[in-house]
Length: 172
Image (cartoon, rainbow, N blue to C red; front, side, top):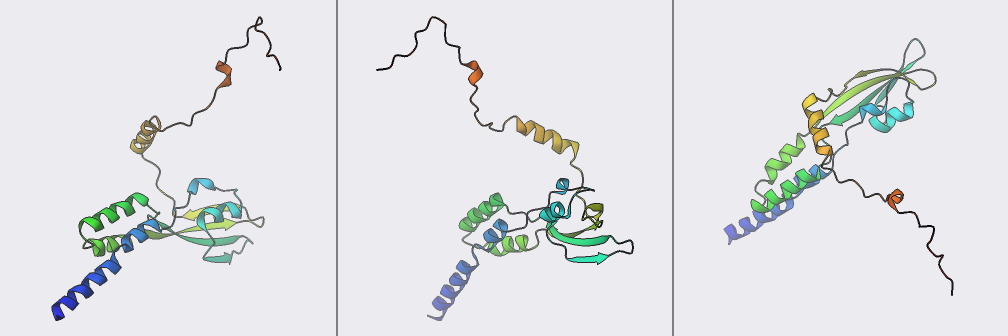
């Protein structure tokens, strides 16, 4: 009786743990688009991508430096969540602690420092910048573009013009 109760308790705890890694894979922070702002951009453009600054300080020359903190490498990923779901089913939840640990250590924090002038325009950007895309990845992306499904567009220029000897529609 005691072993049966322990087995039920362990099974119940296992069921409670199922799905944590799935939820963690679906919830994350989208990485900022660093191409969306540059020197001369407005504060609003920067904050749309990086969020609100964690700290601000006035510099001696009257400019303002804001520090932004964001997470890199933990974007929401439905494919990863689906993989965890199927592995959880296949292993009856035994793989869940491992997947949860993997998700727990996804991503890392980075900082960027942006200096604004008195008009809230970007004067300088320092700190983390993503590495440039390698030529191999660019070539692979271009090769994949040819297989993307394009939306159907109707082209009216291919419709033949009515012939001059066609009779006009009659009205009843």
